[in-house]
Image 1: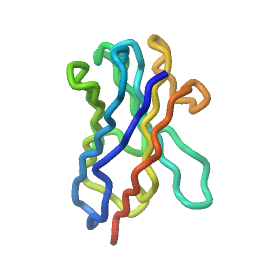
Image 2: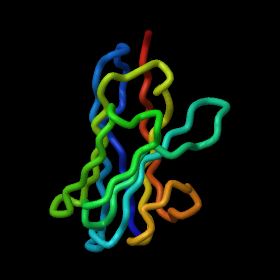
Image 3: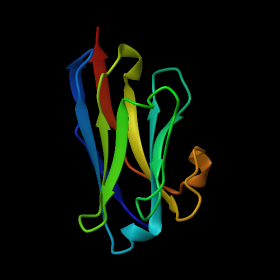
Length: 124
């Protein structure tokens, strides 16, 4: 098990940027693939990005490709989501999640460790 705590959310104007961080407890962080998901009011939780345990593989949802970048620092037990050119439709609670290494899955049910979420609001 690993405990996850997100930070970095907030209110930003359209076109602006935010960087989310997710700090993980435990010594086995580097054995997890890490994902970012988001959930807007009245909508299902959706995949945003995932990074493999080594940091070599990354995958993005089409809606954020070219604007968001996922990265990780295994020495700091932290995964990041750099969000640029934000749009009002990016408004949601953003969650990080840890899953078994090797899958790099876009499916929420592939992850068994979740943070509490951080709110991102993009105004038009």
